[in-house]
Amino acid sequence: MSALTHATPRSAVNFLVHAAGLDGSAVGARRNLTMPGVSVTVGEQIEALRKVAGDRVAERIVRKPDQTIMRIVEGWPRNFAPERALALGFRAESNFEEIIRIHIEDDLGGSFVA
Image 1 (cartoon, rainbow, N blue to C red):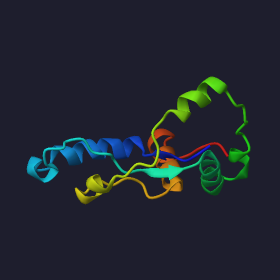
Image 2: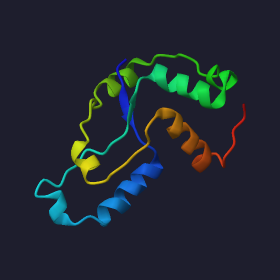
Image 3: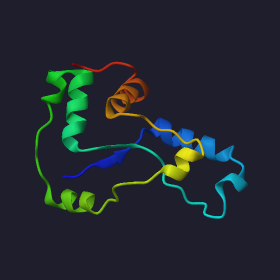
Image 4: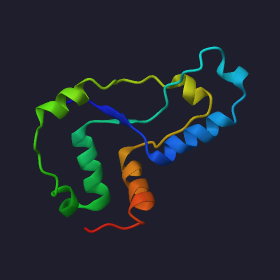
C-alpha cells in the first residue's frame, strides 16, 4: 500500500485558528488550500508506534485485510502538495512519532498500557 497523509486533531484545530487570523488578500482568490501533514505507509506507522510505545504495543497489531476497507482507502487522495498552505504559515507534525506522542497526550491522558 502506498503512503497516506496524516495530521492530528490538534493540528486541524490549529489550521482553523490560523486561517481565522489570515488576511484574505494573502490567500488570494483561490480560497481552497491543501493542509500539510505527514505522509507514511502503514509499515512506517507501525515502526513509529514501536519506537514510541515499544515492541509489546506494536505486536498487538493483527494483520487482517478487509477488501471493502482496502477499496475505500485506495480511493483516498495521495501526494498532497501543501506549498501554498506552508507559505501562509500553516504547520502540522513533522513525523509520525510526533503524531503518536500527541495522541497519547491529548487522547490517552499522557499514558498508555505497554
